[in-house]
Length: 362
Image (cartoon, rainbow, N blue to C red; front, side, top):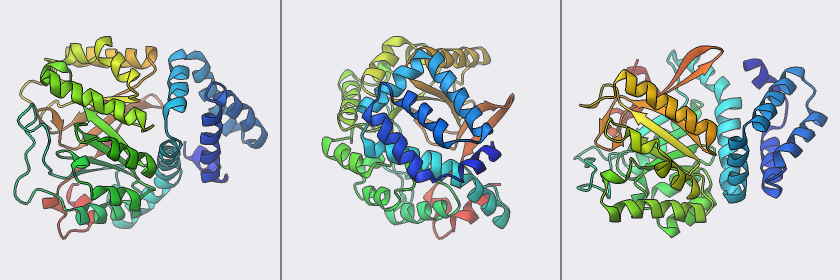
């Protein structure tokens, strides 16, 4: 993988990504085929060509992937799509890996791929299924958020997850997103603060990926649930890239992996469903059998629907919210790998450099 990335570093990365977006948006139905043909004219390295051939074969043999890509090209704002690819493919992978390795050696501490900032804010669903309440000294000031994002970027971290209440209630955070346009902000939200004005502003900023917390109709009253679903329509109408984050418990596992739950989300423009489990931070964890069944259902959805699904684990769940560090398990070269995104709070970071906070987590 590193040889592949090093070879790709010989190419003008930003230029490549911008032109990929241009081709895909110009002709969503045939864009992937055009890009594949174009790649043969300027990519001569056999290793890179082999990877591209594998990607194209996977695309051709999985109808759900074709539908997913075409749907996303038709309905996603070009600014959002370009920022997402630039920040994930270029900043996080091509450039970020080497920067994080360099910083890890320099400071003798592991540098994570992403950082979770717990803002400790209020939630518009407090008293309606959510127990996240701000406490004295727990709210992270916007200036502190901006400092931490800047220090994270210097360490090679280009993905920042914002959680703790609903960050879209804090309008001043929009200036942070604008200031760090080479960072992809994944914002956990109830959706209730996603007004048309906020969505329009985000579509122009381009580097914010909202994840709406939704764990089934049974956990909210009908009015609140429909309001949350309505926020998806607002984001789709503005061409945002967004997804859903679903805390899973024994009580809702059947509902949230069913078509009546999934298909409306796809129609409303959601691109991703992250299923979050807590094996230790809940009174009713999933059994091993239920966990295996959940993994099979998630895989089935990913293989048969135009939708990306992923299983995440958190070490702390508060009612309907994942408020702890996040872990993502995946397979690579036949081995199980795990990415851990550490969570930091204002109590940990106040007057402390981020690198010192990361060192204290070892």
